[in-house]
Length: 124
Image (cartoon, rainbow, N blue to C red):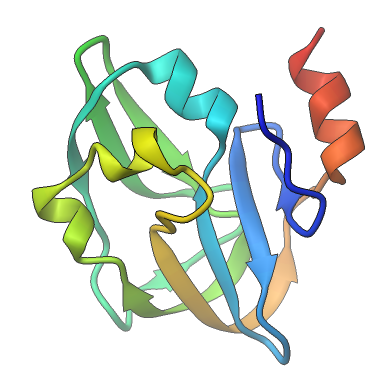
């Protein structure tokens, strides 16, 4: 398992990368993609959609199940990684490179864990 130290994590297995100001990238963790298995579909939000910390903003479908992706922050979707529509397996291949959305105007965060704290959480 990979836990990049520059990211923050949620107990729902999403990561967030601060881009400075009030903007961040959001994706799912290496642990999440390994537990889900091969991803075959992603239901992405639209640019301009509002997201709320600790609430679902999209879902991913794998050969095993459909799972909600929870937002680690409250803000507005500035950009969607639209390549994922045709290639959801990018989340399996590179979960930290294949971000899902860029969020701007962030006004609040849910409970975030450091890489060390997240690693300890998933090992329980």
